[in-house]
Amino acid sequence: MKKSVREEALIRLGFLIGKWEVEVIPPHFQTKSICGETIFDWMEKEKFIVQRTLMNQPEFPSSTIVYDYDSNTCKYLQH
Image (cartoon, rainbow, N blue to C red; front, side, top):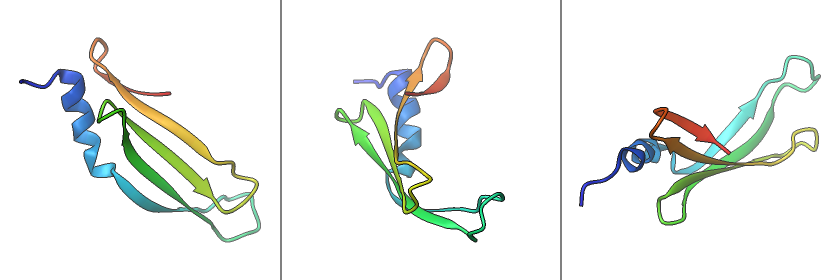
């Protein structure tokens, strides 16, 4: 069965899947850098991509983002 435009668009983001180290260098903090990790994974059997970011500083809260694709506007969406 041929994949939809939306499915193909999300598959193009597949290279992100995995665990990544994150380093933030904020110019207004005294510290040199803040480290953490972000994990990309498939959600709902490859219908969405979810990103979870965890930083090791309380000033930077954890976050979760769900990525989708809108075939009508041809743009990626973040929820």
